[in-house]
Image 1 (cartoon, rainbow, N blue to C red):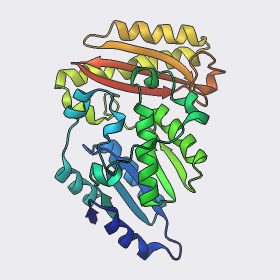
Image 2: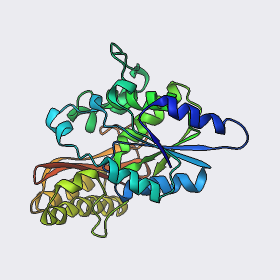
Image 3: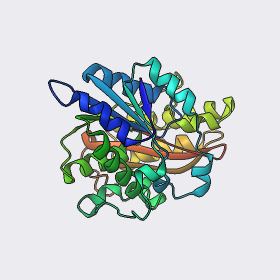
Image 4: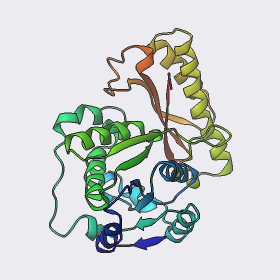
Length: 284
């Protein structure tokens, strides 16, 4: 496995794979890797001849300075995990590599801004702008044919799909199902900040989502399904709900959700002061 902090090394490495049937798969991450990230890598390994992973904690997508400061950093552990998975190249650039001094440019999101509004967009101002800025810059460096993203960040997946189309990147965006602990808790780097009791409490988020999904599959309308999930969550010990909403999987609208085949149920909640998000599709 090759690892580097600059694009020059990557370009030199990639030059060996510009001919023939080489297929580069890309997994962008912010490090603090867990089995969910490794599952993305495994999917990429199955479909691509080379797999590239980036590790970059993007300052532009944090609207809370404390959140950025407390984000876990485990670079050497991450390298070891990726080497064990047979990753070909790990790019761990500095902020100066991604955002050169004086470069404050951002992508125009106007054509897909509706996807970034509501849900996380309302609660984390500037977050999705930061996401599209960094991912577009990474794509210009890596130049993959496929990019693998987890459905746990469902709204982010939809925003990045739209960005790729708008910026005319010639890549396929592959959405990968959320990986979960045996309790149902969605795997997340933030789980490391929870105690054992906190992780047990956090598993109730998934139970609430499943409650709402069962209601929807039973034929309840979106308001009723959402109300049942919220009621479950509000009775959950150690969990403080921030939002529990149903949105249309194509438009991310929470006001015009369409038919149940288009519903995704979203939740954000706090456990032990740690903000967690999760979602389930009503029809997978």
